[in-house]
Image (tube, rainbow, N blue to C red):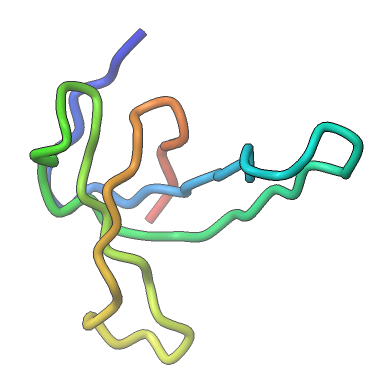
Length: 74
C-alpha cells in the first residue's frame, strides 16, 4: 500500500544495501528525516531531507522509494 506523504512529515528511512554479493551479510541503515515532497524519479519516490546530528535543518536530500519510508512520532 502506497502512502501519501506531505511535506514536513517526520519519517524514518530503513535502507537495505542490495548491492552486496549474495554470500555477504546485507547491511541495514536507518536514519531520520523530513519529507520535502515527491521526487522526479517516478511514482512512489519521495525527496527526504536527512536530519543532521546537530539538529540543523540543512541536511542532504535523498530520493527514497515509498517502501523504505516509515512514519515517525514528533
